[in-house]
Image 1 (cartoon, protein in one colour):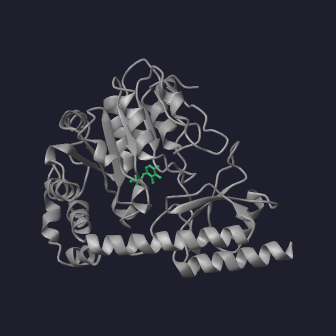
Image 2 (cartoon, rainbow, N blue to C red):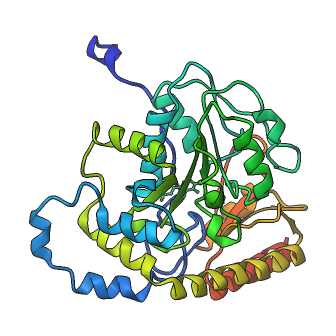
Length: 353
Ligand SMILES: *Cc1c(COP(=O)(O)O)cnc(C)c1O
């Protein structure tokens, strides 16, 4: 090893789902929304003045912050925005998880948490989910340097009841509890209602799944002003211009159209519930998902085999080759037509086997 190589920070990166190319494929592997963003987003995009690209964007991201504050009924000093919730959560790790005590998150969860903990050199512990994949709240009643979990959890889709979330926040007054609500719009109960009551609670959401804007990279956190101020101080010490101008303008536009948003969510939820029935009929079992994906295991056929067979037929789902998860497929909810094709393929494949 060269001398300079010894100085390199070594990390094992997060591995995102494939973004396969081609148009004759069904992509159900990264929990994107199958429907387009709100119509107002397209209108604003067409009307965008490209001369504004010469200038730096607003570092305070005011148009978007204002729109989110109004929509969620909080102060503008309670909203922090970033380049997807990945950016917001990374900033939160840097800002809030800064003690010698271990940060706690479940053993089966969004795999990026572990990557950030390693990158920022924070110690962590990963309490095991119970045998039905539920978080055991009692595991979080110990000394810790912070807590983070998605609700609903990923990749299981399981929702923790709001009372349990509150109990967890209440029993940890000395650490920051981050609830990653990437999927809560699909049927969860958001912890946003608890924000006025708890100064140690930070709720993080994203435009990537429920608002059909994964490509724009928009995420946000809502908490009490002191938490938001701390996040801003770290952001301004790192990169003042995280969000670009089109994301700010188009993101604000997406929030304005609540009618479209609700309608589209309803369609995803309806397709999810129908998909649960279809999967059951085909011999799958799964935790009862409240997200826009289902984490399913077949009673007789190995998930790895199904994953390969699906991929060979241009249907992409997510497969995690790791202990406890390697007999499950995480299937994002697509359009009704896409799901029909998936189930038709599975039906043929399983009966020919
Ligand atoms: C998708 C996802 C995110 C990150 O989404 P962004 O596209 O960065 O906003 C964060 N947490 C969980 C649990 C996710 O599934």
